Image (cartoon, rainbow, N blue to C red; front, side, top):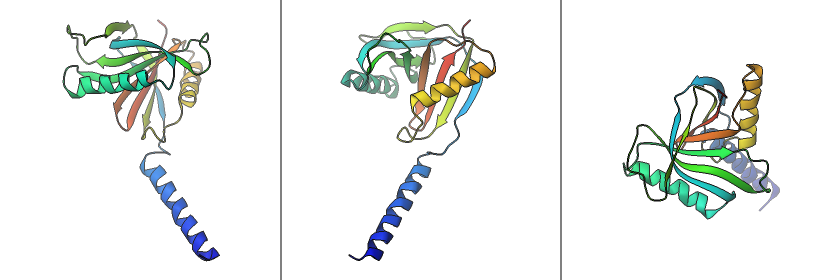
Length: 175
């Protein structure tokens, strides 16, 4: 293969990678706004441990299956506590479902968690999770918006996975 062929092949690969990045929403604008909300009514489980744990992946899949099967009506949700006492790589979360309406039948090993809130600073991300900004970048934007508006936020984020390409990240305003 001569140099011209190698350059042409590399050019096609780069153009293809850029096209895929655009298609997945890699350059989509991340909107950050203050929204009025009702309390977050969650059902799920508490987890503290490694951020790349199999338990987290299985917990996310279980929440999605409960929604897809119609056993729960809501949105897959992960509440990330900002616990500075955790070792590097460790996380403390509540993972499960934000309910659209109440339920009396909790799935096995699920508990209720209600987060009181009237307003939240929300980032709306419309992109495939392979090309979404990382959580630190999103949190920085939320905190910057709160500072501009002189709002004091809770010390956690609430991620709501609306579908494969849309995510809301909320930081509720302290009441």
